[in-house]
Length: 270
Image 1 (cartoon, rainbow, N blue to C red):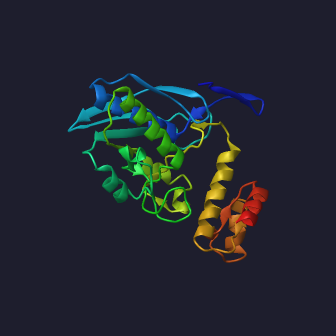
Image 2: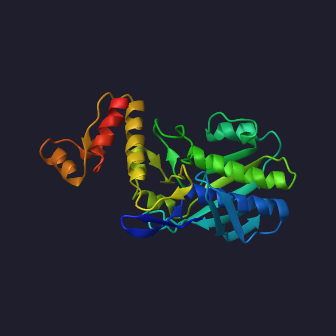
């Protein structure tokens, strides 16, 4: 991976997303199921077109399952998930188990191929409780792009081994529930842990796009919930004013930071 990028007159290090970590860990766990040998590393091409190669950690196997972890590296981005171990557990399923498992996990419709890789979240991965997010209510907060990355990484290992068997991938993050308290997840209605995210697979340091995307998600959620107006606040001063001068709970506002113009344009679109 091209690890450095020049921003704000400084050389900053890129990182990789929780989605990339989950896909790499899933690749490693399925590799063990297929061969009985643990690979030292896993690698994949991210949607951004950059190759990521990482060591596999905490490798364990037993009772027909295998699990391993990849350490989240956010580079020079101030990401609260930096350093977390993102685990994937892999287990082969009986034939024809895919449809039932997918229905149970509430992951929505999928192609026949996708149903061969059943993805769910465990400890430290959040659950969606409100409409308007990337995943439906009740599903694990593993977004669409990470799900496709996991499915592709697992399918590649199976195809290389000449196998066509359904496999269940469980993503879990020890410490994820505590870390999620420092994120937008409680506001968005994602409970019990962090989200497995990433559209490019790569974390750009000091990314403004991440904050703008979060504002868009929250506004989409308000609209999906039936709201036809929304209260915007730029930050803590705005929140204090809402509370002290207007007597309104600041938790009802969408925080926009310096992106008030972007937020207003999103409101117009919605």
